[in-house]
Image 1 (spheres, helix red, strand yellow):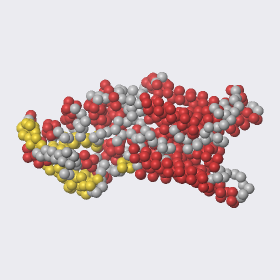
Image 2 (cartoon, one colour):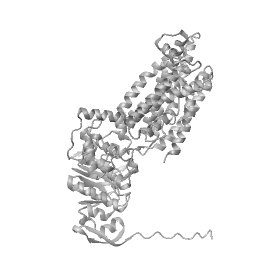
Image 3 (cartoon, rainbow over the protein chains, first blue to last red):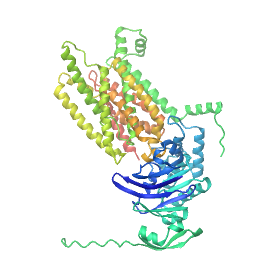
Image 4 (cartoon, each protein chain N blue to C red):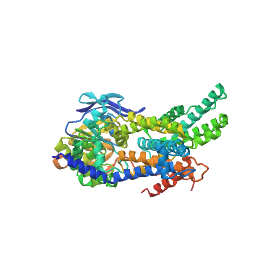
Length: 272
Length: 358
């Protein structure tokens, strides 16, 4: 399965991820948490073989992911970027069918099996009724389901998602996470995603990895990871944590940033 | 989930009938019909207008020598060359817009036509000087068939420069690419004008007409020079359709779908440059066809790339032939170059499209 060993990543000279070793459990939901700029997205990209490591390695089935043939890799692993681009005027059905690309030789058009996989993906994500609609005309939540359907049509066993809830309102966020949870339970899909909401991560993840400044701070089950001291240390927030449903931790109470509020600027004495 | 097999012969017939009555088939039919109309008009109309019967007689070789000359040696090669350059510029623009995800991309705007022009003009001047100094009484101009090759070399170098300078943090940035192209195009135009002013006095008129993009004097030789490149371009574009569908997505998304992005982008850029530069080498830089026709095709065909492709071929040819026809008939006996007419026709329509954009 997917794992990293002493992985360090950089954009040019700028180091982003430093010496991270972790394993992604097969058939589980793994959440990457961490403050902005902690390296979550970068780590996800390296899982998809999009970023060659500066040192260390990402392995898929014990083989460095950068050595995989791109098409073969695309049959094992799908990725949904944070802000995917909608091709001009494309209909839902046609966009989802693009997920079939790695299953055909590049000159072949889609076959009946591909159409069936597309139909199945639409049914699983509940967008069958939208099949003929242009994607641009859909709401944010519907679009996100369409993108997930496209990744499902790819029929991989690993799905990587970069902040799949970021541009959605609360209701849609939960809808997307519940969809991923169902797909994970019923189809054994391995899900790896970066999130910002600690409670959502605690509610849906089997395993949480917390990154801070490019390093792996903590990894474990939600109850092991989401603690008052970690939240204080990594996110600079005071909060109290109680046990929620199924023993999953839940951040409650009035949360307060530990950062001292920015000092008020001294009045500009020269002008007055 | 079960899926019944749907490919029985009757279903095929039904889907064929469904296709023939579909809006897509109507679009293609309308495009084909307009092409047929402008083709006939292109042969019929001109300094002397011919009747249907005269055209037919001219084509079948059953008419006066004069009519035959007009039909066969003047109008037919000129009209057909117009068809080819329309296809070249339209497809080149279509590829460039798709591969750079940039609706403003076009061979003219990105400087590819300017690079092709500069090298072709310099090659023309040097070649002509070599020929005439070797044999002062030889009046034949520098061989036409080499000009597309020089133009392509110039176009390719420019395209590569614009492509790499248009990169930003390892990604192709549409805005940066367009701006880089515009700046490089400006510089190359200045150099071309400079080359013409310095060494071109013997041919200024001829080269200036060529630089405006003109089909004046297009003969069968022009057509034969261009045709192989049309076929190579069409074959390349056909191979590119499916990867291009995927390449409309975000770069990283494309790569996780199993496409080796850099390889396919380079191939698309190569085909786009060959198409535009070879046409520039034969008739000079004709602008706006490459900008307008892909837009119109996209509007008409929606996101269906194969249909967009067919419409680009048909409508590109229609616009080029129509622009040339208007250019040589409106102010007859004076001629307005096709590049000027296509711009005059195209720009208002383009502005109209922009104003209707939601």
